[in-house]
Image (cartoon, rainbow over all chains, first blue to last red; front, side):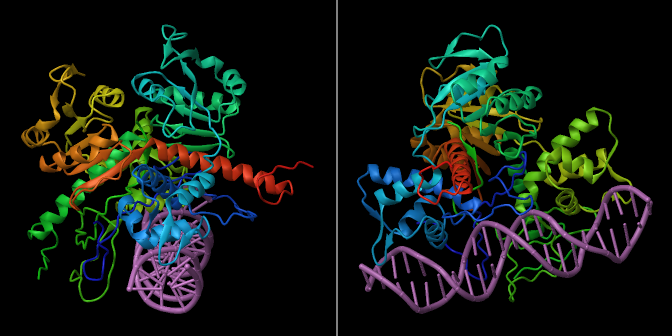
Length: 271
Length: 271
DNA sequence: AATTGTGAATCACTTCACAGCA
DNA sequence: TGCTGTGAAGTGATTCACAATT
């Protein structure tokens, strides 16, 4: 049902979005992290390192598989799963092969086994406590998410600057002041900090989260954060997303124009 | 929900774009595309295409440059700009080179020129009307963003299913019913649809947006959308973002373990 | 017969390193 | 001298295509 694969001629390209990068701080929207510095990854003992891009897709497969399991499916082929996840089957199989060999040739994969292996690989067998900083519109939405997606990411601290908000429970949890970030995060062993503040406050919040010992930061503020290398930063940037879409609209308009013989150098070549 | 940003992940889309262009002054870039040699491509004109990854970074550079301009900067070197954007300078220069040659050797770039060229390339010289579907916590946050980031993305329609919400103004704009999506989007010439509904509603909303003629969709719902190839879909998936962070935490723990001489299986042994 | 798993090829992106210019 | 712009090399990710396996 879906994806047709490109053959020659038609150049169908999957847009799989490549994401990629992210450096010491945060950079583009995509996957993250690149070892960039120096030698980078030494030799992960047992880990065959998984490409960054594949990690993001594993999370998607996990969601699809969970839905399938709920509907009673017990086995699934790479063709089915890849269609549901919107990727091609070769990519899916390659991605799964990073986990090990858990499929049966001629048959497919057992859903429950795959779910277990992906969860293990993504580190989902342990809980990751989350703090949300900036209880504005977005922060509210995040705090109310009620124990974040998929369980395993309980929100255990909320922070804001506004005195009127301090102490007020949001989603069942009272809001603390920004100044308390380091102490509270340390006490509650927060491992992921979510920044939903205005851009001007973001760097300072980031610094406090780091002081509080958080290991990862998910940044919704439209700024490039500077953080030490041991802290993983990812960003979600609405403005960037919209601008990328804008680019594609423009590109498309352009194409149409040249197909109509408009711009271009007058060299329209059509069949 | 919120979720992460991802790249486009899912829907199959094709973008092969044989482009053509590259006129001395007005060239509109295209995303990189499969060269596919062969006889097919009949376009002798050297296509100027911008890698997808570079497009995302251009949006970041634009924001940094705007901030610099506000502070009175008139010129900037690749070194300065790249540091502020969190990338290395070679990558920055390469990215800017896709726009054309707008720097001065030995000096740097003129901020205002760069801003103008990036805006042109990203198609920001024209407005892109936005509709937000699903006025829950997140939709509310988005609607109130007040004419989205950076101007140029005015929110001109809101939709929800809840009867109690229909007609109620949110951020100054009344909410319409989901059923009206195709008609309203067409009337108001919406070009970008933002889906902030629960996952079960997302595909149907997507279909209606497409019926209403929107060209791009930004999906916050945690599902893989199927959309026709001429519609650009991007997704922001909070669960995926958190799981990627989780993976990095696990990986890091793993590495530490092996640095301590632990072999494998999870058991931490400290010397 | 069907489907996985994967080496090899291809394609995309990044980084290097330096020629060219102001 | 300083900094841009870019070919070329390097790295990483995707796709192909088929042998291996049930």
